[in-house]
Length: 481
Image (tube, rainbow, N blue to C red; front, side, top):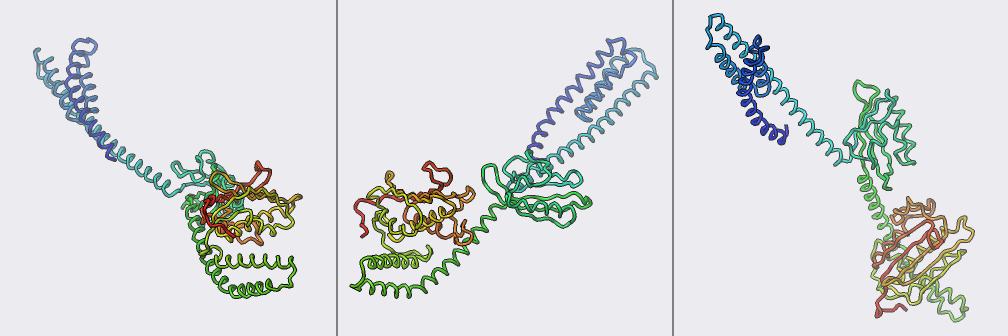
């Protein structure tokens, strides 16, 4: 029994005993008074005394009952013995007294036994409640729900009261469902028929993982484990656990391992291609020194030199795993955007450039950001779009510079929006690496900016918009040539 129950009962018993002793005095005297004044009760002189004694024995036990018997005997002696008495009368009164005493003993004993049984029952119920509370707390802390499936009773799933709401809603909404199909992610629903067949034909334990969408839009990973009940070949019991945190930890660990491997690979590639890059750079320099070059060809060589310099910076950056020591400077965004627009061939470019919007960033990193965003927008509008258009806006907003890259492609599914900047996540199944947007986000945040994405029927009339914010450059910063 818990401490609160013991304390409550310890306060209750003294008050009950006091009432019992008070009644042990009052009721026998009252019974004597009624018996002597009511003619109909003269033939049953001990009836009210016995009822009083029984009530007091039940309420307070043997002690108050003995007091009640003693007072009943005294009142009876006071009533009878002033009159002339005979041995038979005395013998009858003694017999009545003995009956009262025996009755008090029997009733007190039975009451005592009942009280002991009641105390044990209360103790058992209190312990059961404590265990139930502990179980409920354990279920919630472990994010676990208990269930039973009776295949002979329709096969519906019964969820136990107190279980953790692993589906994000009360179990009463779907208690008795024949299976879990309506509760899990459509891509995982194909596992349910196989699971049901296993429970029908095999006694081996079941283990099944699936995803469950919550009403608030969250997607949770669940693991169901169950065993057939011994002796009940058609009844299964088990638990379903929310393993979302474990899955996220596993994904983070796998992502870290991939990033580490990519870092080693990128460093190796950067080291191996440095020598060819230097050779090509020298050859381009020699070619640009040829006075016989046509102006158009010379401009192509100059463009190749700039792109080769950018390639050299990218290799040193090694896909974001190795920090460069490139000096930041104030650059006008539009100038470097125009340098990379050649990658959007076959796409209409809608420009809206505000003049003199400058930010502080290494120039090659700004070009890398623009290249990734414009290349993705171009890829999004090259399939099945009658008027493929990419809009590029550069506008100031307070103390921020905004770069908006929009397209009129098919858009990004809502389920992918939260993962679009994750490393190795790509919707281009055959050609995508899942690195571009992740590296872009890393570069933007390294330079104090912020990048976000929106997709759908946007107010601008486009389907997808990548928004990049940078702090505006200070008026006295170093200007890029």
